[in-house]
Length: 161
Image (tube, rainbow, N blue to C red; front, top):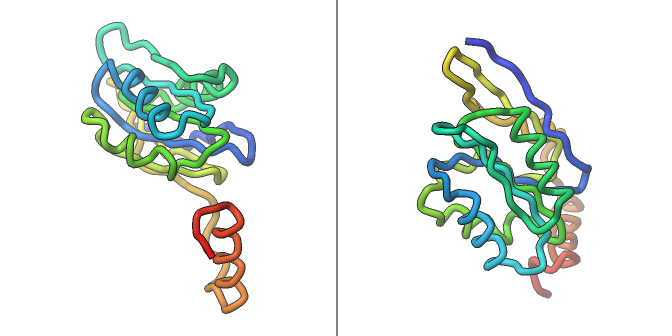
């Protein structure tokens, strides 16, 4: 078995979700779940089929994000993995809908941070072992940090008052 790190290619502010599912209709179900959760969100999906023709299936409403998802899914190349890249919204807007899809087995991450995927490769294929998401903590928040966090959540509309 060989281990490698695959760096996620994306613009700095673009969010993505990396998960695993188990059925060919995953692309359609992800597409429907995202549109139903937030019609304004722009997105691209890529899903690595793991049997039969073993094709990379893709969908979305933004061709640039579909291509971004495709490049990253091909670079990771793990069977049944899927990438969703998002703009005009956040993973929190669609994550519960995605997790509720019957064939979705796991969500590895949902982030805008720089990320790397830990990949294991054997003779039969590739597997995702984990995610390096962002950086290590630099300290513990103080009073001013708490106030800044609360202010930020209100500025982006996630908390009232």
